[in-house]
Image: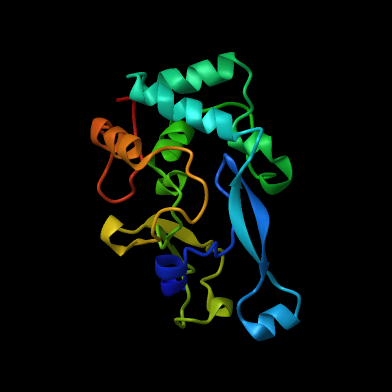
Length: 189
């Protein structure tokens, strides 16, 4: 899978980031998968939410804090990501933008037009490694952020960028509270 991200820039599944929607990219390159009817997908800008993502990046570049951006989005009545797609986010309230939501968008390199894989690891708490049926009673999987040097990042241009590389990097440098492990801000900067 790492090679598919690194060399082909393929979308490997999962929910698209806020600002994007899935689009059909043709038949699957694996002949057997194509015979089963599987298709490739790519990320295309979502006409409803992509302008909000661009605005968030522009506001941060203009020096606004992540908390201020969240407050403004709430004041403008812009639905947060969890409310934008309720069918995929039934476990979230969708009530309001939060500082953490804005910070996560600002820290996500996928907005530069690249695919990213292995940002997080999942521990299923298995008593026998590889056997998900051997989970400890009552345990739920936990996610942890991998160090950035373990991420697999595709070349640019795998999907339309919502922010330039230069602007994305400038934001990462100005977000003083970004941690080296997860790339998200934990406060206003």
